[in-house]
Length: 432
Image (tube, rainbow, N blue to C red; front, side):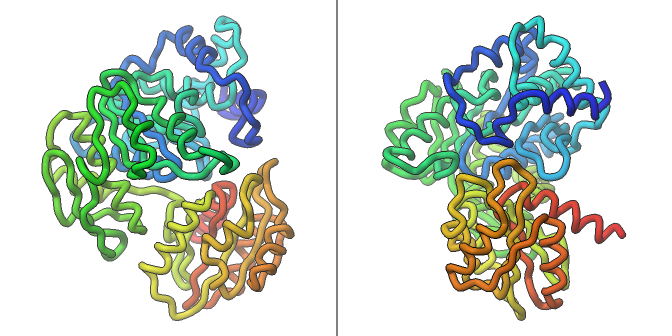
């Protein structure tokens, strides 16, 4: 297969990311069968498994950089991607090459009939990642959970360290005891004898989160934490405490106070993996190299353009808080947004702080789950926001840049399906 053929093969399989279809009869049997036929490649290296409602992508990348700084070859599996599917599978921060990705997918395709199953899009990619990590002989894999936990395709790994960033409202109707239900699903990745690094601090969830078969559990707030986080040029300066001690003045080149909490979780996970304190200089080096595309990422100046793929209410509130606390604007804010089904546009706009914007451009993401731009614009109008609707992300970015002065800030947010294409559009402008 070449990559085009491999991607056509992928697209012939159910993609719950694209459709947000409700999965019935959840089970890992199909995924276990698939990796078994492949020789269980996920058992060829130790794994750090990362779940949570928000922040798991940032934490996975932080963990990877810290492990790399210690001299390890690190495989990282994340989802979804922003611009290219290759982003999901990386070795030491470098995305898998087209030819290697095609070969990895082809290897899975070759055993589909032997396995006697029809895997999903995500199962194929997950198996391809596990196989490639074994082939290139990574020392450790950092694996981000997809949308689930206990029944996520990634949960065929037997992780030495399981990480939970937090429990928030996403992929749920918010009815009944939803927090407990999500917590129970997330801790399903914690395996007997492992170390569980728990970033969730809600005391009402402690009984569920503490009921795993982990050999030990480290709790944020008591065993580890971010004790101080202040704004620094280009990110945050944080003080991180773990069970082995404290390291001060760590520069994290990411915006937002929440990234201090993510850094604390990441460092705790790495020390749990090594079973010892991490060297201070190595920690500084690892964090200094962290990049998280699409997470309050500044991609343009005059006007300042910020990309933040906040796709749920908690993420939107974190975005608004970061903008409020870290940026002093001489001009106004122009917001470019698009949302997917399952989001209340009014609630999301309020959470993003869009009521303070000078103008809003709504667009329709390229997804079967997209909320039409006129619906989002009408919600903005109902909040008293001056807004207009355009068809595509490219049109929305062009319109916002045309409206903005050098002193203004353009915020692009609402979905990966908005931020990804916007990032491609803006990078093509810079390169031109």
